[in-house]
Image (tube, rainbow, N blue to C red; front, side, top):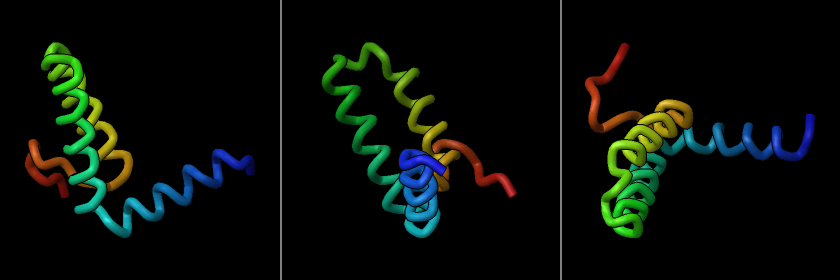
Length: 67
């Protein structure tokens, strides 16, 4: 297993242990990007946030919980 694979696995493990912090961090990053781009790419940024939250276990504040 390569270094990047190990880092990815560790990041996913930490994200699963702290989903609220992941969600909050992604929201802050999205807000920052929206501000820096003048809200020109809001839909794409939101899609990226949602994708990252699903992949990292941060949940998705904008959709109903899926069980």
